[in-house]
Length: 150
Length: 164
Image (cartoon, rainbow over all chains, first blue to last red; front, side, top):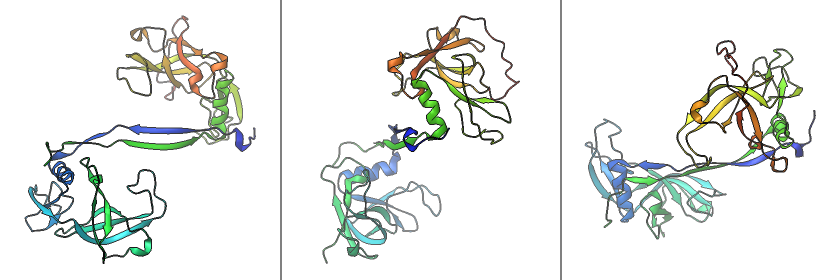
């Protein structure tokens, strides 16, 4: 009952789920602002500004509703270089996944940085938003971040 | 300014796999192209598994004894499906059932057709309806569905064998 490798069957198998997500009042507002090329965070009673905004204060669990507009520039607090982007990645050339803390925010958000080369990346570097040409209302309305000209 | 605040986000998920059947399942699947339903018997437990596995799921003994199963069996359980979904273009309601093939110890799951859905019952005798020989592929789709044989129902002891 031994078989050669060629007798083993294999076939493509695709799983597809056509999900729609309800955004809720806070992420809904965040995405709406992105569509307008603005970035909004939410301020906690203690004065921290959370971006992307959350519905509840991570420290006290209180509902949050004080939205504040923050800047399009910030700093990279952590990053990882992607040498071979996958089909669903935001950029189809090598890029960095990075945590970016925007000016005026106290938390960092995950996004892509189009730095061209790994050697151009460093923690603490300043970056700014590159907006998508046609905003759809979602996180990809920020196409990516790019390094500030130094 | 945008017209309306966003409330819903389309967020489709797509996963692309290459499924590799392995040795035992490949033989099983190739059997369908030849109009055969293949199982294997455990030398220790004496149970016949279809689909076959390389090792007995109960006692882990290697199962090398391949056997060809009958194309007839008995419905041991079934469900009436009222929800259409994209991968199966079939009139609802339809019935999917566990069919215990004659000579097997575990049932396979398949579609039941050529009978009104509300006449299908546990213990009903059914037979495989095959695609034409030239349309058979190495896959269970080579059996289009099972249909009643018209034989008298079989008394199934649901508690005798929990697997069935």
